[in-house]
Amino acid sequence: MVPPTLREVDSSKDKFGNSKKIHYAMLPSLALGIAFCVPHGVHTGHLAPALGLIPMALGAVLALYRSGLFRRVKKGSSAEYQILLTNEAVEDPAKKFNIERFLLFVADWILMGGLIGTMVAAFLTNGVHCYYYFVGPGWSNSRYTCHDDGLSMLAAYGTMPLLFNAVIHAYLILQFIYYAAPKMFGDKKEAREPVCSRCSIPIREGGKHPQERSDEPVPDMEPMGA
Image (cartoon, rainbow, N blue to C red; front, side):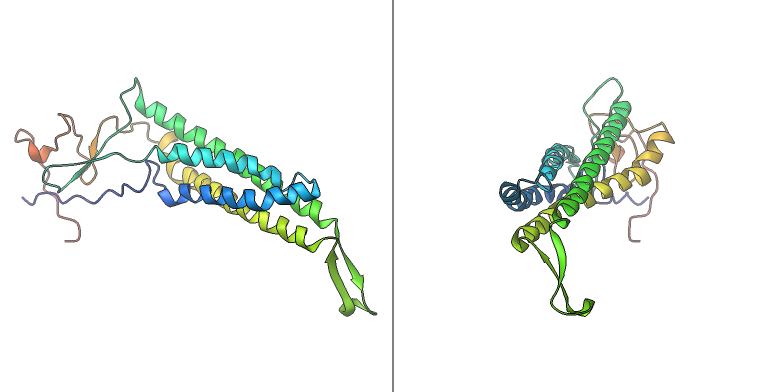
């Protein structure tokens, strides 16, 4: 019997399968949004795109919260397998896990809608200050200008962090729809105890893998890559 060789668990991902980089990228984007949107709002008195800093800030708070949901990984003494630990002991961890997923899904929808709405408002409020003028006959001699090209460019740069965050929220929404939702509304039997990351065998006795317990046989499994 070949002992099971367990796949590595990427501890750089949270329990929803999202990379740390996705969450952490929202933090510097907030700083860029402040750098571009605040000066534009101060000089023009327009709410957009500066109003988008509110959903961006809330998204950054969610990113910090999600960073606390990363998988806690425990290695066995032989370092041949890893154990995935579930949430802290509660009355119904599977139900709490699903509610947590759904609330984050709703929050992503709200924040994405706020960001897109702010971008549309920014395009409209800054577009009315721009116009065509003619230096000669025909459209070939027309020029497009704004009352203050510098402020218009500042507004355009300010919408880039908003668009970036909206794309991240859209990605998290699609990930929930395609991966989390079928598990929530399909199979109701989610694992309520630690399981082996390779063979999915429940880890019941003090966090020990069946490989370490002589009273339970380990299924004959081919190692990965064989």
